[in-house]
Length: 556
Image (cartoon, rainbow, N blue to C red; front, side, top):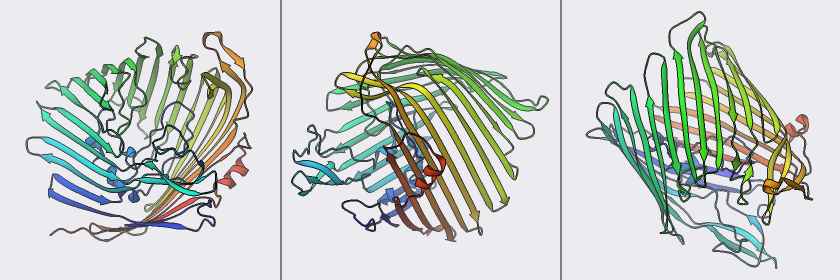
């Protein structure tokens, strides 16, 4: 497998025509029909689908789905309630900052970066997955990432290189054992060893126990994490549920994540320091009645508190989903939250008084088996002292048995929502946010022959941010006006992929891939203008990656 990459113009790439080449290699070997070994060199070059563009203004890290084939295969074997293993951590963007005095590789002469790596290169990876005797499933993965350096200029104009991510080794092991008639127990363990840093580990045990008739369940997991040889954190999840019945299902769930729980070196944890409880009740029908084939009606009630006893959320929601005999389906729901405080919004400056919020949503989908099908998903709500609404429309079209076309557009607006902007010392600055968002999606697929196909996909995103009424948060005393330079901007992104696949012999395939990624901020604008911003999406300042992969199936 080989790839090369072109980048936009920069100081270190003045004409934008320099390119980087790379080569990868992978192998799959079956010890038996149930136990498989996979090995790869540079497995990150196998990614053929780009991430969905997104603009995250929240206090929480964005969760990205895995798109790299090497890490997608067998991924379900590592899944547990707590996300102890999040494969996107392997090859993530570097975290070092040479301009930060607290960084190990701080340079007091630093002026500005001329090239900063977008990701960490994966040197090699290996995985073993499958079942062994006695109903035991195992999954093992190890990956090695290289040391990454950034290029920068000093205040005197000297060009230097500095380490922004040391070499690291990632290991995860998962085992699961079938017990009783239809139950299982399991364990998972992860370890990250990195130069210049103390090893970080996490792990836990989990279980899914069902009564012999499968009607009642007891499901849970306990996890622990350890950092710097001293900070050990814990998390627990317990669920009691009714899994089968004529019409009624339900569960009661309790969850705790203590203040020191940290799974984010090789896992994903949106936040810690919470105690949560929720109740789910469902009434469903399976027998045809009039025009309805089946229906699912759900009621949920939940609450979250931190370990100081501060209420973070408490609310309820009702949602329903109906399948009709003609192949159409209909869904909808209403949510209400009465949370009192948000302890994350100020980014470390204490509690923020959380306004009540509510929202509704609706979905209608026509028969997907037809030549043309439609989907419509509107929604609206009130939160953060402001209103919002969104409207999604999608169309799928199959002009022939070997051709599929799918498109969708979503437009969303929010008005006067209170949001954190920045911190100035020990003060948090808030503003009223007016935001417009436009999302575009297009996919097309053609099967030229049984062995030759082409797929094109594109995702566009435009968001305008208009802040107003800047003010300093005073806690219980409210706000005071605050003078702050305008923070408005427009963000545009377009990710597209073209994939050609040819199976030149049974089990052996050639892939040709072209991916194009563009993302830019414009700090001089604060409004969304369709014609102007659509043109900007097709700017030449994009990153292009061309990839070719050939696989050969050998069965001696």
